[in-house]
Image (cartoon, rainbow, N blue to C red; front, side):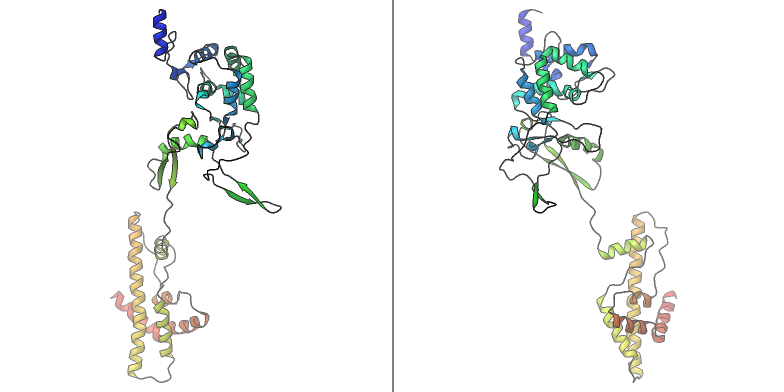
Length: 380
């Protein structure tokens, strides 16, 4: 290949000697280039060949300082780049926290060198950042190769920025976009807290969507955080994916009672306010000192109306409960026996004095006779 061909290869975004494209070498994700340990130095040299200039220690120091677990820019892109990175560990976990970069655009190529997972044959993919924060048996080889290509000063600058305290965030942008929670201090007063989410959740929710795509009680909401998400972090992309769980609606009292009865629970109470007044009126007729045929006929009618109403309610409940069983594929299941009308009418919240009056009336020989007659007609 001559000089002219070499220049044309650079214009096409390829490294002539390798045939690889820039996006195959500089990336935040695995690029399916399987290496052996002896080839790592050459791979770093290949990365260097795609940079517009040789990086200085200050470049890698900015990458390290711009890396953290929580990015305030995910809440508002107007966060200052020097006041937007937080670092928190994972409680009760042996696995280190996931770092994500948030840098100015001109630092993104350097960040890709630090964050690209190196796919070493027989080993899990791990980046330079991973080898610094969580060394393993080949980390020394990887970092030595990095130092040979970019210089020991660049490695030291990157390492000191990553293992140090990171940024000291002392103020939030005056945008009003951050949620604020006030927590009580043990000694009095309040603590102002601002909840933030780990940056790894941004991409994790997108991956989780595939497994919950067909769950009926969920919906996914896409929220654009900015027209240029790469300005927040080159390691994330696209809109924020939010999971919205629609909880089942609370059943009305009657519907819940029907379902409980269908599944073997108690019979639903008859909640009709007019019933109490009718029972008390009936009880008053039973206590009359004077009676005649018209009074007795009226007393019979009041008892029959109470019993008829209770039987209608019992029939309605059993139809509705049967519908529940049928919808759930249990139509062959037998419903529990319903109560007698007198027991159903009495099962309600009475005032203390009224309950004694109602109990006396509903257990009277007159009501029992009228109830027996009504049930006999129902059977026939």
